[in-house]
Image (cartoon, rainbow, N blue to C red; front, side, top):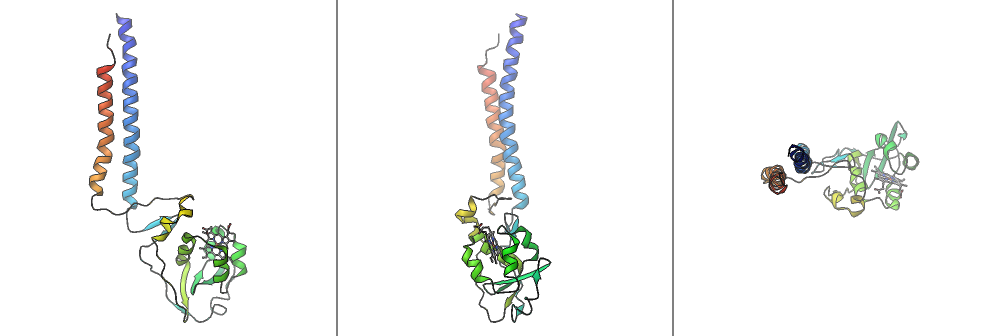
Length: 201
Ligand code: HEM
């Protein structure tokens, strides 16, 4: 009798383990996701390590010629280029550039719009340009960049993302509540079900 009872216990414990594991796993995953998401929940968007503001806030200092003011900068310690009328200090970006630093150094201090466009840079890359803007070329008409575009860019969606985006929502608090309690409820129900259905000898 005693032996049979002992055999039943591990079964019961196994039920508890499976039930608890499922609940805790889902709960922790969702809970952590929620907490982590709330920490970064803002109007800022981070994509591949680059943070974009929702509004374009850039330096609008005017430069007369890329070849004089921006043009002295042709080394990997000080490298500026002009793309679509924007004067960019890309010194810090050189080593991060997926296409290598050489290609940018070749056009350092120059108008690089043609070369930039010729590559067919992704929308994300085009938006990234703003991050390095230190001014605009005098008389140049600079087009506004829609920062929200990059997150729907299909090509970029397939690339590695270092962070995720959670949009602001009025009812996110109630969502967090459900995210936490629904897995807990599921685990409890499962555990209850196991307790009732596993035979006790
Ligand atoms: C601030 C300026 C620039 C930024 C932010 C930038 C960003 C990027 C990014 C994110 C990529 C990865 C592919 C993509 O997402 O499109 C890339 C690739 C590349 N870029 Fe740039 N880029 C800049 C300037 C330039 C310039 C001026 C040139 C050429 C003179 C250039 C040449 C290339 C090449 C050759 C590749 C590799 C393309 C491939 O592997 O298919 N980039 N760039």
